[in-house]
Length: 173
Image 1 (cartoon, rainbow, N blue to C red):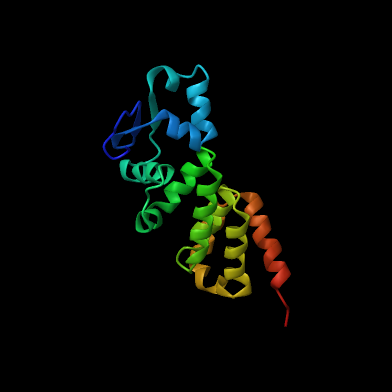
Image 2: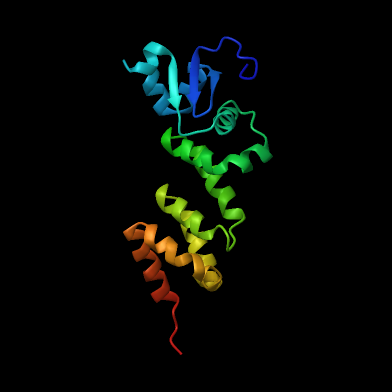
């Protein structure tokens, strides 16, 4: 149905291409999409949705998730974009799947990015996982070169939480 565009009735403009979908499927999966088609918004009248903060490939993966046809490797490749879309379109189960997935492979090269994503999207399990990785496992030393840049751009409240965590685990000699 999605792949062949059978009876599609909505066009989605992405940052680099166009996709076709079905209003009923989108509305059933997301209260945000439902609202677009229920109320007198431009999307209802024009049957066009602008999702210009996603690439064609990422948005295609998003639609594949909604339609129940996403493959595991596709999900892993686009999970950060899917997380943003899940948050924007209020799809709680996708948001939870993304959080669980991002928890699985925290390492020194991605922990600060994941911590920022956890803060941005209010993902308490991911935030806790990142904090544990940094402080309980002592990996804060592995990211000391990147931490200065992170602090320059991090949210003030997030920095306060990190400082509180440091004080909690710090044991003076």
